[in-house]
Structures are given as structure tokens and as C-alpha cells.
Length: 344
Ligand code: GRG
Ligand code: ZN
Image 1 (cartoon, rainbow, N blue to C red):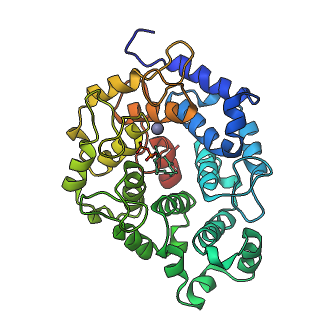
Image 2: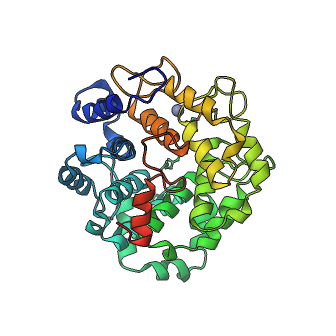
Image 3: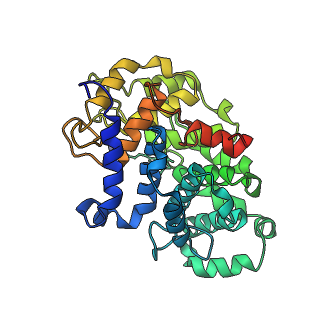
């Protein structure tokens, strides 16, 4: 491995070893969000062309043990379900071409429940009671009975959950179950005068939130709501002297913004506004070339999250030897084509 090159083999070894080190500090701290870690790690392996290094049956069986009776998925066996882990579970099953093991209606119904639980906190309703009342009716009934359902559902949504719900339902071919127009209206209401997006109306523009909004608009065919030049300008100003990207003005660069910023720039067709070579250099300078893994900044400790965003960022930058990744779905392009076009 030469300095300035991607330490691909070392990163594969690092990801496989993190999965095995279940008693390490890193895995104890992240036990509750293991489903996210599995998605980050396995997507990285797939981009590196090494997904076959894991036993897919073992992973799929574990994922299915994390499914709650409501249809949603938890971060680990025996934990509570959460919309974040549900997307990671769906994405990981898509990687293995195993979406058909899911009851897509049960999972997509649960997306509704999550959103109601999060955004109707005053109802004191648990997922259990909502599940029970939900399964006594159907989605169309719920949405139309009191007329305010989609308003309540989307009225206070953090744009992270808008993205997750939309991406998950699209991957399950169930987007028609929500009021897409209202979901888009809500996202557009979070647009700021600088062209960026925040988590709620009036919330400060942040690159992570911009990815969510632009991604959700891309998936729903609504990118005409974005002022591409204005947003492209804000996003390309995230590149600092070292070549790395930050998430907001005056903040430090961080490898994960190679994903949040770059994917957004690609979706609005303005990626040529940043210096790609300098960004590649920055990401490569954050590698542990000996033991594998990528950190947020040079010389910091590596973790699976930043390893994923570093490798995914390099894929977006068309670095040699990597599978292409889809900027909206955060899954390899061949996986997305298989889901939507049935291409093997
Ligand atoms: C499938 C890729 C994918 C995502 C799922 C969870 C999610 C959807 C999106 C999260 C978007 C988001 C808000 C990302 C930002 C994460 C981050 C690095 C936050 C740090 O923010 P600050 O303010 O740090 O603590 P800065 O960098 O501003 O100092
Ligand atoms: Zn980061």
C-alpha cells in the first residue's frame, strides 16, 4: 500500500474485525445501534467488492430477530424498534437481494406508527397501543377518517425522519401509502434563504439536513423545488483549506461531510464546483493505513461510521476500483437498479 492510496484490504479487515469484537468498548457503546453499524459496515464492504466475505444467511437471520411485532426493526435483538433501524434493516436486506423476506405492508404500516409516536408526544401513546389500534383499521381509513392525519403526521416532522420514511417506503414500493405531496410541502417549508434546509421550518441550514431534504426531493421527483445555484454555492463553500468539507460555516472539516455535502451536490448537478482532488487527499489522510478504518479528521481514532462515509465519498468522487453508490438511497447503484428495475 503506497501513501496516498486507499488501503482497501485493510479497511475490509477492519470492518470484519469490528463485527467479531463484540466485547470491545466500541461495540459495547454501540450495542443499541448495531443495526446501523451492520448497514454502514456491509455497504462499505459491498462498495469495496467484498460483500461475499460475510455469511449472508447469518446476517439475515439476525436482522429478522430484530423485527418487532409491529413490523419495525430495533437496533439489536430485544431492543425497541425505531424508524432509523428500520431503514438500516431494509437497506441491508436490499444489499443481499433479500427484500422478499419482508412483509412490506407490515413494515410500511409501521413507518406510520413511528411518525405518529414521534410527533404526537402528547398522546402518551406507546407503540404497542398504537399498533393495536392501527391493526384494527387500515392506512386509508386512518388517513381519511379525521382529515387531519397527514397534517398531524407531517406537520412537525424533523426532515431526517421525512427522508427515512420516504426512502424506506420507496425501497418497499409503498410510497403510495403516504401523502407524498404533503411530505414534499413540509420539506419545502424547511428551505432557508441561503438555499439550504434545516430540521424544522426556520431551523439553521446544516449539511446533514440538506442531504435528507435533497434526497427526499430526489426520490419523490421534486428537485425543481431546490434553487440549485444558490444551494450549490452554499455547499461548495463547505470546502476548507485542507480540502475537507465542514457541515456549516466556521466549523471543522469532517470526513462524514464527504457524504452529506457531496451527495447533495451530485443530486443538484453541481459537484464540479468543488476541488475533487483536494477532497480525495483529505479523505485518504484520515485512514489508518496499518490497521484499517477511517476517522473524522487526520490522526483521530477510526470508527465504522467514518469508514463508511470516507469510502462512500470516494465512490461519489469516482475513485478507482470502487462500486458506484447512489447519492439519494445511499446504496450501491446496482442494488438500487435491482430494486427498481429488477436488473440483476
Ligand atoms: C442512509 C446515509 C443515510 C442516512 C439516514 C440519519 C439520517 C438518515 C441522516 C442524518 C443526517 C444528519 C443530521 C447528519 C449530520 C450528522 C452530524 C455529523 C452531526 C454533527 O452536527 P454538529 O453540529 O457538528 O454536532 P458540526 O460538524 O456542525 O460541528
Ligand atoms: Zn463526522
